[in-house]
Amino acid sequence: MANTKFIFVTGGVTSSLGKGIISASLAKLLQARGFTVSIQKLDPYINVDPGTLNPFEHGECYVTEDGAETDLDLGHYERFLNIYTSQANSVTTGRIYQEVINKERRGEYLGKTVQIIPHITDEIKRRVKLLSARGKYDFVITEIGGTVGDIESLPYIEAVRQFRWELKNRCMVIHLTLVPYLAASGELKTKPTQHSVKTLLEAGVQPDMLVLRTAQPLTSDIKIKVANFCNVQKEAVVESRDLSTIYEVPLEMQKEKLDEFVLSHFGITIGEKPQLKAWKDFLKKYKNPKRFIELALVGKYVDLKDAYKSINEAFIHAGAFCETKVKINYIQAEDVNEKSSQEFFKNIDGILVAPGFGHRGIEGKILAAKYARENKIPFFGICLGMQVAIIEFAQNVLNLEDANSIEMDRTCINPVISLMEEQKLVNEKGGTMRLGSYSCKLSKNSKAYKAYSSLKIKERHRHRYEFNNIYKEAFSKAGLIATGVNLETQLVEIIEIPKHPWFVGVQFHPEYKSTVINPHPLFVDFIKAAVDFKIKNKN
Ligand code: GLN
Image 1 (cartoon, rainbow, N blue to C red):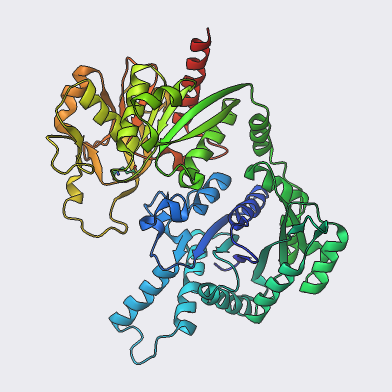
Image 2: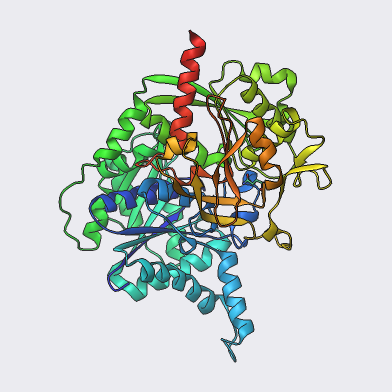
């Protein structure tokens, strides 16, 4: 970490200002200039990781290559930067305290009173430095979750204060706030920003730069006012307007010279402005689609779009690649029945059954798979979505009595989806699923092989249940075959119905690996199949 520069991104006034997107955009701009960058998220909640959180509470749980269950912001980092993150990029208060308490029990602080300062703050600083030690990055951007002034954020802000003191000019703080527009008086208000900077100052931290979220353009006067009242240069006040897509933010931040100010702060020569050609090409295609398709996403967390964040983004990447606008209709699985499926799916060009846990909505998901199979609508089942397609086929094609997943019915007569062997002795819930990247061998004559153009792939997982190999032959004879298998464990990773135009189920989560620059091949081929379906059905 000899020369690594540390940038901390804090937020004030309100949550959900998009610190993750601003951090990822800055990282993108620095990366485009040839610097090595990593981003980290520090989350102030006490869960050790978000793996045990309901998606309704916290949005999607994102999984890294090394099997860390993390905050969905890590997904943005990977999608923007086209790099892999790891456990080291995601830290929670729970993890910090767990480490300190374990050390205390081992006697590593023997004789000392263990306290928030210095022990918790030291552990926070260690986690930040750890990232730079591993990757030898030019920049480490650390996003601090929550809002300044929250009790739970205090140890993090204190750690930032100490960091600045220790590292002097190798450290920088960017503070993100909101400038609300009061329609009644027709004014933009800077007071919340001033107050939020004051709160940071009370904790001993003077921000070096302010990013102001606003729905209206900021005048030069407003920027000068904020600069004067918050002790920063005028150039350090950056406007961040609401945009139609998050993928425009790096370009807007480039216009606002966010990266240039950061470089000048560290005394680094600014150099030439990167063209960001591939990024701009992507945006151009995204904004000028040549065709339009409508897909159904059947799941049980559909009221909160963040619950399926990576799937939504994967459709944006693959849609742009195919120059196709993809509209997603979110369908509550519980609402799908024999009668309503006609209504829900009649104008749909492809059906995706989403990942998930537990029994709620399972009948609706099974019906969605059935509808896609019988009506030859392109079908994409992800994780639970694949398991549901198998259950449906067992019930309606193989006519297996009481076919189900052990997860839904422990005592079913035909458990076509069973608990993985290694899961049988697992009692604890946190971090105990089959997690992270595993390899998979594809069959040559499969839709999966056609998509990937490779026989060996690696994808990320997050599940406890698996296809029950006892039934493999029966399925195969009836026309549902395993086209992707993990050769070490014989776990079925992909199933297909070759007679169907495009019916693919995957036990892994392809959505986690889709990025702007590398759209995921299965999402691309699913969209292509949906386009074909639409063309055929219109004629
Ligand atoms: N609940 C299923 C399992 O644990 C599927 C998990 C998922 O969709 N991520 O196997």
